[in-house]
Amino acid sequence: MMNSIDNKTNFSLRSISLKTKIIWTAFIMFMMPTSAYAADMLAPDDFVGISFWLISMALMASTVFFLWETQSVTAKWKTSLVVSALVTFIAAVHYFYMRDVWVATQTSPTVYRYIDWLLTVPLLMIEFYLILRAIGVASAGIFWRLLIGTLVMLVPGYLAEAGYMNITIGFVIGMLGWFYILWEIFKGEAGKAAEANASPAVKYAYNAMRWIVTVGWAIYPIGYVAGYMLSVASPEALNIVYNLADLVNKVAFGLLIWYAATSESQKDTA
Image (cartoon, rainbow, N blue to C red):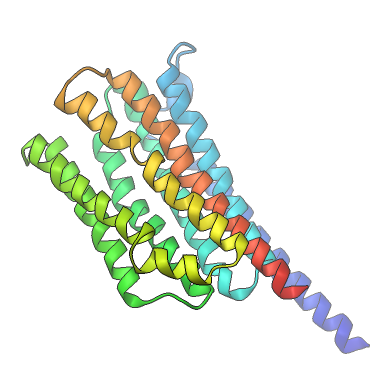
């Protein structure tokens, strides 16, 4: 009886310790200093700046949520939720700085946005691998093909926007990387493995995730063409659209993984 009580007490202390760390993580993110002191400079009619603030708060809240929920899933799903938290955490930190750049200068924070994408997009693609690994059908080839595809998609885009490469060439190479990713998750090994082996909950999440990659990610090349190749979109419109796209492509993406993880964990422990 005493051993049972001790075990419950130890488990409770471990849980409290983890929750305390999560709370401190959120506190640190709130208190991170930024150079432009955007809180004092944000104008009530600066809707782009407001969108940066809203998305940064949503990303931070999502980080805490995903970390907290790692305690509600079985071991094989914990990595997926931790990676989702990493995605939203990295994005939140970059949004702190992007919103300051915008409020202070009214210019697009292109460098910060691409640094964010170069870190978070490969992690998002790795999530497909992690889901398949959780159900026992992943291969190293899936991991490497998705990772390489994201780099082919992102690096030329940044080089073109930063002036190191022809805009059209960078766009074409980036699109080829995106098409390669779509082929892998729909018709390649990853897509076939999910179709043949996934449970209904995992299959639902996987299908929704790949449609986010298809439809949600289409916003970025459309903005690239409109803003950099045709010059018909204003920086204000582009940044609002990009910010909303990041909300869907990072937070909603992570929520789908959470849905699959919790559904499968409940089934495993039933």
